[in-house]
Length: 230
Image (cartoon, rainbow, N blue to C red; front, side, top):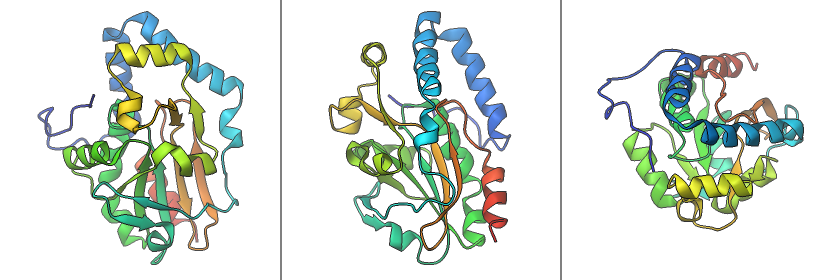
């Protein structure tokens, strides 16, 4: 119920563009994952896109909701704390079991220092339990907090949450992605991946929300948007 870290895979780091890393993972999935399993994931994405799901999420110009969440160590973190010194780069992910979430987190790790140098904070939010968040943070040596959003309450406020279909639930059970265990509740809900840049007053300056969990913005693009936000 995890994706191998860079250290485990025998690499000291992968600084390639995220799209290249994701393309490699997609090729591996196409080669090794049974077609019927791939089809279930493709149908889920297609349904969300047909619903224009991402359009219902908070976008540029909206006010990000204030929140208080525990981090991977159980420490309470508030959005006010994160915005105290400047802007906030906020990442919504599914969990440590998702290879594309892991890839994004490791890639964002490489620009974490640059984000800090730009006077901004960086944090990720997932619905997984504190224990799972701790494992992910420790395993992938993340340089930023991984916040625990129980029952996707904050993600709901951002308009990011959907419920896994029955066939997707059955698939996750067969492939040992036990969401009730991983997330600590039986809602079978997940956030679509999203990346936000939030100004100090809570105004959203940049929003990248995608129904397709295999697509995420490039870290350098996020950094560029942050530095060019004025």
